[in-house]
Amino acid sequence: MRHGKFGWRLSRDTNARKALLRNLASALLVNGKITTTQAKAKFVQGFIEKLVTAQAKSGLAARRKIASSLTPEAFKKLLSEIGPGFAARPGGYTRVIKLEQRAGDAAPMAKLEFVQPKTNLSQASRDQRKSAKNPRSSEKI
Image 1 (tube, rainbow, N blue to C red):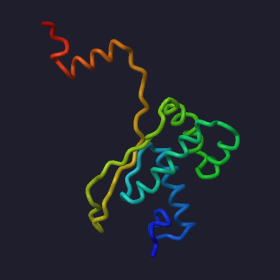
Image 2 (tube, rainbow, N blue to C red):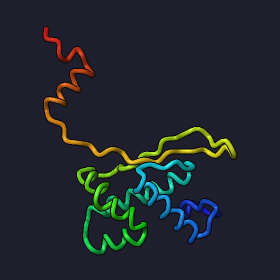
Image 3 (cartoon, rainbow, N blue to C red):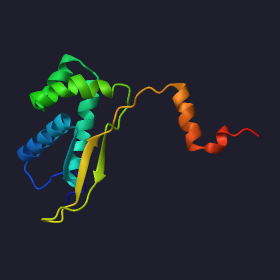
Image 4 (tube, helix red, strand yellow):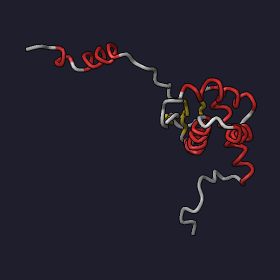
């Protein structure tokens, strides 16, 4: 019995699985979002999270490891745009949104996209948001 000794197989051999992982990751980095099956989206999500985290180390060894698993275009975009945007975020860079089933084979579909990096909010805008959410907090008795 398997007993959970392996991750996602996706009905592929090892080389095809690695190629699929790298192609989906590169497409996500270049386009910002991809639409695929739920299984594939969950499969590539952990890999992308690790790449963005490894980018923060910014050492030569880390860069070479990232470059070995991405296309040159995706590698440049990760280092120049995506990585610095998530520098202050501790994790959770992507999200999977479930979509309707595919018409041809009724496969469960999902959209994998990056979460927008949070911007620094001033204290005034935080207070304004808080009062808009709770109107009673601005009332004075």
